[in-house]
Image (cartoon, rainbow, N blue to C red; front, top):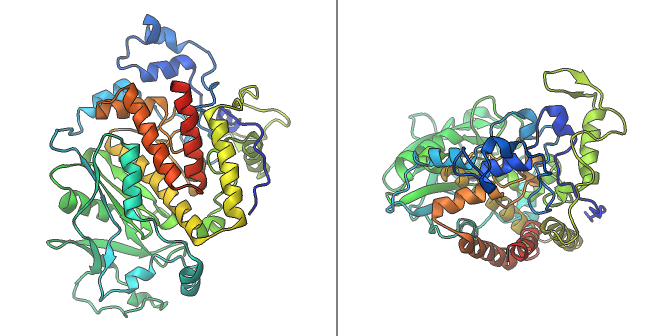
Length: 469
């Protein structure tokens, strides 16, 4: 797949679909209010209500653009989702334990599978991939230590370590007959309803189900895994625990799948690597050419909006269906485009170069690194909830909510100014800490050179460091 779009013009504002969906972009004054530690005043000594009336364009820098709010995006479904400003975060923060003895973020590697239940391993391979294809050309699942090192840079100043407790998926002894050792049979009776997540001292029952869409043979219940993490796995010195799994997850019976979830107040998160497998991109309709940062390509954004409208019209807030006005762009100001030397533009150029190199010679390593980059971004997002951060509605940001894998690929790996301020308050950081954090992330990304997301993030960081000195 060669890159055919030059991404010559980059959009800094929300898409024109945002206005149709009912999303109102914040003004510069409202964004300043979101950064204020108190609701009464903001920068320049102005009253917050006065600053909020400032209609100065908010996204003109080319560093932190607006959320795109494309059709079927999370904010398009819920355009009135309230933002969590700094003052609100500080209030919520008091509810989350931050004792000095609880300083470590632990990352648990995907559980191994017991020798008497090898069929559980089969559930990690997509139904569309034969075992021969998986072993011959498939990417390697992300290495947990690589994820730990990324999170250590992302949450700079917080110790991040591997959880020393080994975890194992095994049979759940419910007194029923045991399934065959290989689970490639179609007989539902051979598929256990429950399996066990074990440590050396405990065993937790995990519900399973057949994937209703047939993407994977079986899925595991996310809530059961989270309960195990909270009840049995969280060390006494843990600020938070992230558990990785290679199995596909579901949260409720009505859900198709879930890539990750965090119980922020309980300081635990779970992330599944299953759906981020690059070999599934075509099946999942995940864009590589217009993944972040190229998701801000104006031509691409307009194309997505037009394609949605051609499906039969668009719904305005309130549920009324209408055709979009032909030739008119709603919501986005076309004059707001990133400068050629802006961090976003630098990231796009790096993305094009990196994508071109892996497109001409796709290797197992390049696919494995692509897989890793996606898992790292989601892991950082879910841990953000453990630091008390809600979904971001102010900017394109690592803490945005996501409604699909397609939207997931369009989102950036960086924290916006509002959420970066929250993180710095959480770790006791300042301006120098921010620079050190960026340098640590750049070093990590450079060490994984040749991966579009990491190459783009490194270029964005270089531009950002130049901006802040």
